[in-house]
Length: 348
Image (tube, rainbow, N blue to C red; front, side):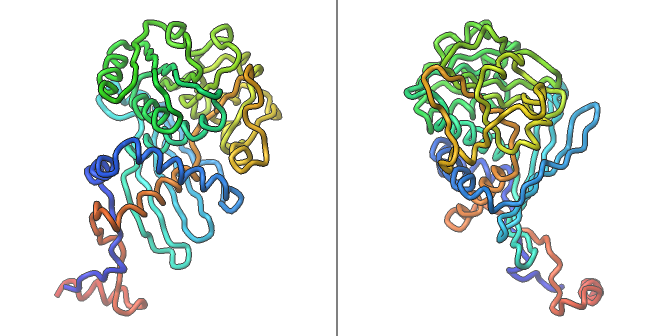
């Protein structure tokens, strides 16, 4: 039987290899590395193909494809969002991703992205907070203590210098889980019994809840002047976390407006409500935080370029670490025109 050539073997990063990679690099150093890659790609935003994610919605959740290309490399992520899964012992979000060479169309990386998505989402939040949060911000309220909460907290520590996190979840077991996981990471971790308690003294307010509904996690009277809101839970039509009055008081920053206006907090506002694209702040062509009393809001829904950056980062780590499986994914006949001949010879 003909053996596949090296050019037909695609590096595949399994869940086990991804976990080994993160521990090899270190969680906080990898979060910083991901943030740097994401920021670098935001600075060249105009080079990328951009389209809202392709979504298939059902009563149970959503399945999405998130594609983009910078003209030389193509990438996509497959991801689902099923809030009901937690009650059935399943993950709310699972994902995998691929990079391909534009010149040949050949895949060059296939990887799990459930863990990697949590890492890149947290790295994006903290990278944005580095640009928008008030100077010297060192305390965060983490409202919603599910699968994202530890990653969000450690990214804010690694990238923004967070010292204290105040935790709240409607499920006290989730808060206990999060507090236990963050123990020993050099943070002051404060479990709270209400969202009002959690936001006391916090300069960064992160909301990350899972219920697929119009919800009010933060009411208008809970949000004082000068804070940065990192709203990452509202990420599909019909799912929000903030009272509309907060949106009307805040300066809103988004990834890709055509997607965020459908999926983000701003789905509650008029279609022409002004927002600022983050890439313009990061590239220096638009202003971010301009005053101490300003409320800045990152209406985060996740965008394909962030996944592209994370895939680029992982691919660049593989030659040194070897943490991948060579996957026989591509047909590779000796004669590119003789695919049937390759099939026939496989029976010999």
